[in-house]
Image 1 (cartoon, each protein chain N blue to C red):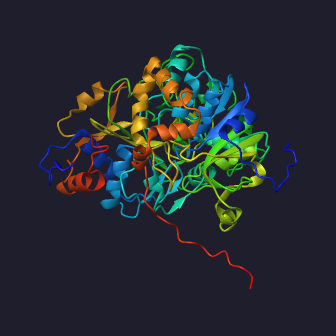
Image 2 (cartoon, rainbow over the protein chains, first blue to last red):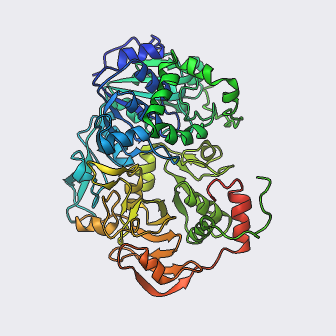
Length: 317
Length: 261
């Protein structure tokens, strides 16, 4: 499935190159990061390049998905939470679903673990994944992907046992944001690690966007922190502050004020499109977006140090 | 923040009352799956009062949170720094929740019915709803797998305490049993609202009124409920927050009044 690559070659490219190479009209695109490390800059570049007819797969469809919807990139959404975190509504998403305005949106609704299991099945190339959810729920009636099977093994009481299953998801491309990687794509994440590794392994191609590129020796000094090995990564994009308005643990904090402002911005279609014109179409790349926000703004999201204690991996004497 | 009242002279707000009542229900509980908002206040107050050893678990993967500030989301960076553990999603939902490690899960909803099933998906028809709500998140999994579920709902109206849900996102165990599948948990056992406390014993039982807040009558709660609300024996009156509870809540748990609106 995955072509043989030169294991010594670096995979570093610009965001523009990575999106041009790996995101095509009509693709199924997974963007993961559970509130932490949301790949916002990648979403913005997809908007700049004018991709169309995408199926977006994302557990927590939040601001970046609302922006991609408003830009007309998305015709189908697969998700388990479609809200602006705890800060309010997604205006464009609600117009699309409630009024088909300006066009309908196909929506596949799952629960969080349903989405996790779809990634697990996808990553492991399994035909389905079982979970103890959905019995009595109306979700299977509106989502034919959620089905039941009979366990081939007796239940604890000796009887037969039925259990719900979800199908694999194998995105054409998965894009995740991370704290750091080496040039070949060995990717280290700490703090909330979400479902990023499974989403990458489930995909045909994977793009990792990082706060910083580090030397091979840095990664190899702490191999347990590598959640995504280079063999699963096709491109490494260096994009500092690329998760804003979400956060990168140890790098910058969440921009809660922007989350709170999004409900009002997105409620008015004209205001939302003006926002996209200024901050996405009106910036050449994420570096310009970051510069336009200004150093004073970023100082407000700065975090202090809370260093972990090093562990001893040992070496043979 | 410098105009903060010292002590407990101010009248008790609805948010304060709900937080205190929910915190008392956590006495003796070990592992609690918290949500953001009033449940955050309830678990942090319980840690300082009735449940000092409580393990607070968040949907983002944090187990044993010890936040230095009140978290603004379930994935706030302050929940990670200093936490006992942070696990990835497959472990959080698969091993921690589905594995049966959670005693109490907190959930909210736009609508709840008499059996403790929840709607967080749509108001109106699913295909063309009048309001699209956020959806399940992890609520389906919390309901199926936590030993019991507490619901905190600020507003108590016939629309939110519905005779029939517009859509059942998160089924209580009685709905699951009707399909021949028995979930691990008892479902919703406590609902704390602006008017009082509803309780349910478990499978086969419905939500009944067990307490009204000071100044609220049983009839008022019945009128605000979309089904014929029954009582479980004599209805108690909620004991008002003590000075100690109020002082901890106002001065230690939420001094910036993030959730104590």
